[in-house]
Image 1 (tube, rainbow, N blue to C red):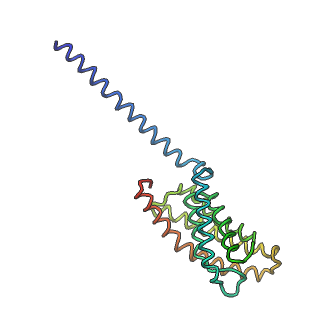
Image 2: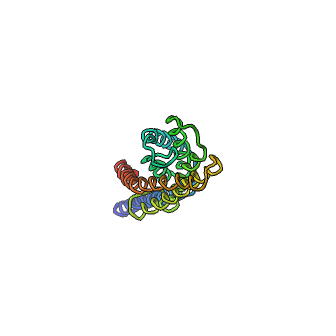
Image 3: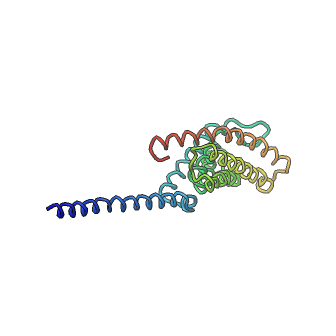
Length: 221
């Protein structure tokens, strides 16, 4: 009887340990796959329902907030406004990728100008799209996670570069589009760039920290 009891106990112990080991291996494999998915190119360049939703949300926010401040025209410029809303394409690009930033900046600027009665300036729409696109390239370093200063800094740098590239394109393309001379184009470029840099550099970290806190509360950070 004792031999049978010992034998059955050994079988029970063996069976009880096998599932634990298997589950552990599956758990580690799942963690590895999840980690790989988080750092795959599809996270940066993929277009799915999530990205489309954030494109629409970002464009609506940027257009609406731009409309509210388009009345604040910068002195000695031609239809260039003080625009704190520039942080929207910077934020959506940095968090959700360059394509989301591209759409948010381009379509959002179009909506803001159109409902403000300014008409359509395709080169400024494209310039704003470039701002969001370049800002989104920060995801190659941050992967959309901003839980530490070391990740916020690249988002700031790419945002600054995006503003310089986007506003530079928009302002100086007016030499051909609107027949401005270099002095007039520079007269739009400098105040618009300074305004966007001040707003972007100050507001972007605030939004990134707030977003990170919100995602952590929801268990996604």
